[in-house]
Length: 284
Image 1 (cartoon, one colour):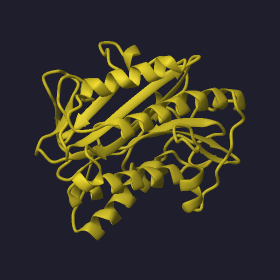
Image 2 (cartoon, one colour):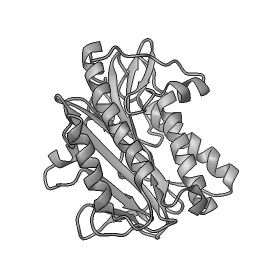
Image 3 (spheres, one colour):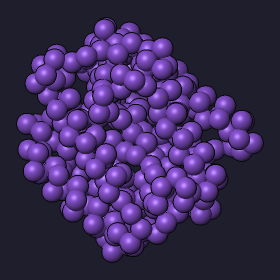
Image 4 (spheres, helix red, strand yellow):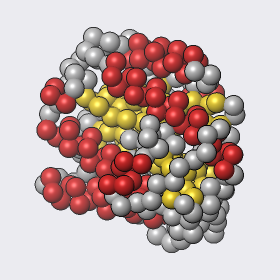
């Protein structure tokens, strides 16, 4: 039995995967819009309004708004905020490290993804922030690459941790891998079993089956991974004030290969670069 009370993942049919690709693609396109729109002087609420309009105009529902007690389309986490930052009147400045988490539901199926970037572009970033962003994204793809039908879901976390450990060794630092928040299954709800750790877990995990759909989302800090929740009861921040990055994709696993549901190209280019099999999905 797996650590999180499920010995195997739940599979989706090809038709269901096609519906999930529709939702995932809407999330990916929304994040692409935000990444190209964000600039110094905007507020995090400006981004939230832009995202909500885009999702609703394209037939989706912002699924973060379906979470009890949350009324926003995005989570916008800035600098020392790790995850669950609430959009509002905060004015973004050049050099801010911004993580944007976004989700959408279309026809009852869900997508969920996150990106990290520096406001004002890479030229406005410190070297350490760029390394954190790039290494966190690379660890996400290492975790994706660990997925295969018949495999152990805990291989994902081991691959994420190994990627960050090696990157930290090259950079001369030790990254903090946040353990209090993990990835998850996704389908007819945004958050489903099984949980997906971003770190090595002892013992056997749930078995990956044909049509498994999960979200992998490493959250990584430049300092210690210890964190606390602010008085708003949502925003998670590092205790030592170090900056954090967050990347996430929704992923489908099939015998034919992998399909990154929230990547604009389905992950084809990045998977090919890693020597991994890409699986095309039939349109919904």
